Amino acid sequence: MVDPKVFRTYDIRAIVPELVDEESVYFGKVGDADAFQAPLEPSGVREIGKGLAQLFGEKLVAIGRDTRLSSPAWADALAEGLMSQGVDVLDIGLTTTDMVYYISGKRNIPGVQITASHCTKELNGMKMVRAGAHVIGKDAGMEELRDMVVKGAFTDAPRPGTRTTENILDEYIDHLMQFVDVSKIKPFRIIADAGNGVGGVVAEALLARFPQISLTPMYFEPDGRFPNHEANPFEVENIHELIERVPAEGADFGVAWDGDADRVYFLDETGWFIPGDFVTTLVARYFLEREPGAAIVYDIRSSWAVRDWVIRLGGRPITERVGHSYIKRTMRRENAIFGGEVSGHYYFRDHYYADNGYIPLLAILQMLSSSGISLKQLVASLGDYYLSGEINSTVADTMAVIERLAERYKDAEISYLDGITVFYPDWHFNVRPSANDPVVRLNLEAKSQEMMEQKRDEVLAIIRG
Image (cartoon, rainbow, N blue to C red; front, top):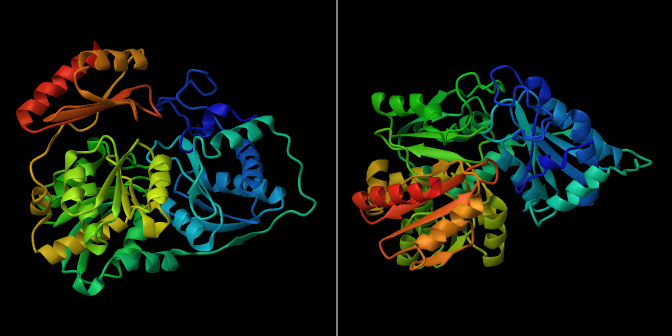
């Protein structure tokens, strides 16, 4: 029996029971209805494979996996479920999530990545796309898949499918190279932290194409125990070593990926963590130079810098709610060339409208080379924008929080696209419930540092009331 709670808004995610130890937040909670995640055994993964065979309705499905200790067994179980329904499996082995998106788009086949992204070692999951890298998520097949798997009425095909393996790394690197002109890239020194996820595998192969780049790798060895730090660079404590090493070793900038490398983060030469919406703005500038007038999609939490620069460069700014399934669908509908989220997800039309953790790196290398200035100066060229960063608050009643905020700021322009977003001429904020955690998240921006701090504290007081 598969617990329906493993089917989430954007993906499947679950506890791997045998990996829960005394240090885990899930210790003693496996199987508990109040646990953050439900458990999932390989037998359940096999049933999900059967359900995906029915949902996809295709003859061939690609499977990739990250470095987690449970990923090989999950990949085997998923393949068994698919093959039991007569589906052939293309096993592409140890891959980043964006490699699965690539192969799905390039060969027009469905794909599944076994991964729990940035989460701790005792979790695993799946990110799934239909042929052409069309996402499966809430209101896009996830509920249908959940109901089929929970019901579990599958009949094995008279002839099982086959499983073949293929290494697509070189092909994938060739795909990435279309986004940059190697001959115009100047020498740089980069320190990169892959957190023992799969990101280092691609980063090493990609940057080997740039002999002028000096790469200092950190934790590029795939290790699903994540022995050095969690594979979540969005949390500063996980990249404190990178923050220290970049200025100490005179690097031009630092870069870090999460566990499956579909998110990427940048530090300037001083070790300052560059907010995701500023990276979105820079990459939007890069692509608007390549295609003037193009549409750019960004999430509703983002700094006004994104909107301002897209308009300034003659592009078409489009706001969307948070989440890759929403961003991707809007990009397809609008034929947007690029999309970005505060969380470090960046999406590209020419990468089958999917997220990618390496194209932003190539764009920044190209911008630094052409401008002749440092990354700190490049970010400063955006102008003055003062951000709170994302601040989490645990609350008893999410809707009550939203109602209090709506009442307090009823004289403002208000949007309920995703949680509540409040707009004033000189400041704005978004408060939204997390799709994954029992918290609400605040992002606030103002026209001055003083105002940002004052309004941040004011809104937090209302949230935490």
